[in-house]
Each structure stands twice: as C-alpha cells, then as structure tokens.
Length: 295
Image 1 (cartoon, rainbow, N blue to C red):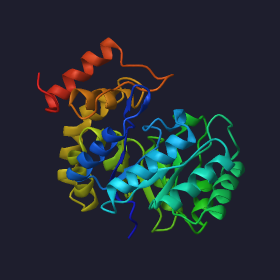
Image 2: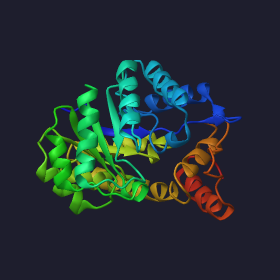
Image 3: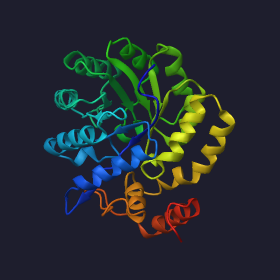
Image 4: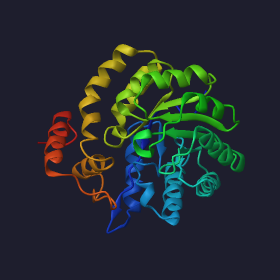
C-alpha cells in the first residue's frame, strides 16, 4: 500500500521579521501530528517555496524531517521551473531523509507534453526517491494530460500525482490509465472526497493547516468506504475550504493560524500581501462559525 494516502498538509512556512520562524514551524508540525494529520508537505506552493533561497528551502525540509522524526511521511516539495534546480532540490530531500519528493510541473516555461515527460524522467533518473508529480494549471499555465501522466507512471520511482485541476473527468482518466498502485492525490480540498470516491488515495491539503483533525477524519471515512460519514464531514468542512481561498493561498491559512494563536505572524513574503479587509471580514465569520476562534 502506498504511504501517500490520507490527508497530507501542505504546511505553511511561518516568517517573522523576514526570516523563517523555526520554532513556529516546529510548533505547527507538532500541532499537525497531535491532530492526526497523515503526512506533511514542506516547501510546496502553500509553503511559499518560490520566495525561499536554496539555503532556506534546505533548512525547512531538514527541520521538518527532524521534528516529524518518522511519525508520518514527509513529502518534500522540490519542484522548480528548471530541471537542474529540481534535481538539486530533490537530491537534497533524499539526503535529508524525506519519504518522497513533490515535483511541480515547470511553471512559466510552458513545456510541451514531451518536455514534461522528459523533465520528470530526468529527475527520476538522477535521484532514486519516490516522486509525486504535481499538476496545477492555475499556477503553472500548463496542464499535464492523463496520457503523459500514464507515460511517467511507467518510470520506476514516479509513484503518484497531486492533481489540482479540480476536474473529476481528468482525475478519473488518470486513475483509469495508471497502475493500481499509482497514488492519485487531490490538490484541491473541494474535490478530495470525490477523488477518493473514484479511486484516489487522498489529498494534499491547504485546509489541513487550520483543521487537520477534520480533514484527516474525512479522508479516513472516504478511504474506508464510509461515504455517508465522508460526505457529512465534507459539507461541514466546505465553508472552511472556501474561506481558505478568499485571498491568494496561503494568505488566508496563515491569517487564520495567527488568529488561532498558532503562529506569531501571518505576513507572507512579497509579492504576496496581507489579506484585504473585505476578505478578512468574510473569513472571520466562517472561522468563528466553525469554532476555530471565538467571536
């Protein structure tokens, strides 16, 4: 059975005075594990990896692996729009002891489908670590098609994909074309239950940052084929899932964590900015009604 199963948190990176708040990250990881999260993904898009130096990226991955100490899998974000840079970051993740590497499709360059295949093949050939590909067209301007995913699935250490198209037709086609042991994880909280219902293995979640217990319970129910309970939890969580995208991710998640007293500062790195007043008012209403903070 794949270790990439259940609710994995795409964990935020707390910053304070412009630097990584290491104790804040340690505390967040402890909060996640205490509340039943199934795995931790540092240095993903939600972790603001695009604005980290290589030194910071390495440090966050190392600190996460050390703090987790084998209790849950750590799937380290190592993707870049440069194949050589992706290989370097992936090699470091393996050396640091990550269970796998989450590798995004190259952004901005807009490679062809053949270019995407060759990118993942090059990374997999260079670094012998389980690789979960990451398809998120809204962030990259390129959609990795199911036929290309199926080609990549033939590469020995390409073991799964994070599908963030929000398109159940595409997700179903990927599952249909790929081997039974290929992990297909939703990259959108909204489609996580449905993805499991059609044969997926879980979610890499933004909402888990603020409600790890609920997201893990929903995935546990769905993976146990208890769809009545999974659906009930989905609709309980649904307003919270929506609220996490009232502004650009991870701004709402970081703001909620600050309001919950889990991090010292919600300030993201530029060019991201703090949440707008209207979005903040809407978000506060949701997280108060959900019970994350008091009114």
